[in-house]
Length: 272
Image 1 (cartoon, rainbow, N blue to C red):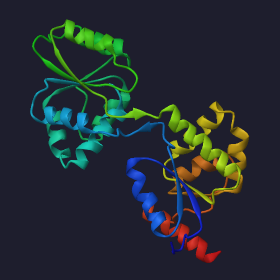
Image 2 (image 1 turned 90 degrees about the horizontal axis):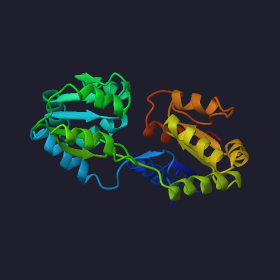
Image 3 (image 1 turned 120 degrees about the horizontal axis):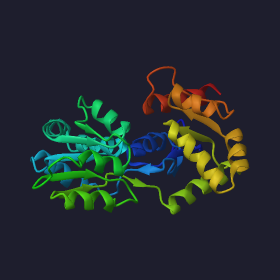
Image 4 (image 1 turned 60 degrees about the vertical axis):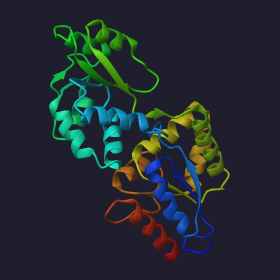
């Protein structure tokens, strides 16, 4: 394929929202090595999240318990994709919102909402204690869980207090297979088989570090980042890379989004 990036191989984060980024590069002739550079991922099937949100919008819940800020944000991403985000925010405004810790409370504030009952201690036990004096008989509680923890302690407490419970887990963690993809990509960089690595968020940098440490590939990561041109979508990401002692080769001068990043890469190659 012809294009400004023909013959170049790019390592890019693998996630649903960044498929567009990979296609932008591929449309210019680049080969992309897609890699799960986040440890928290979207669900492959969002139907259960959509069903839970539909129940919320239909007024089925009296209370909503939010255990993580990530969960609230991932649910809103699904809501936006379905063009029901305004209805979801309105519905959340009508129910009692119980939060475990500052992060879900912060996610609510981003929506213009506040926590009605923040747990005094940011733990499951703290949520249970905060609800101990409340009459939950006959109430329906929507509970946002997180991967790997069905939280039977909380659900049993709610049911024991007379509530009906409807749960949702709106994201997933990377699997061992996905971690091996990251390790393989690190080895390819170290072998000089990647021309560019393009970072679009600082957690991706941390993910590389974590996998390299866990798999004994810290030297390979250092060698790979030393010989691979590094592109960063903006100054926050650039700072995370520079904190490790590496240099950013390409970054947009302004407007820190994916399309300006692709354009900056193209321009840097033309100038080379």
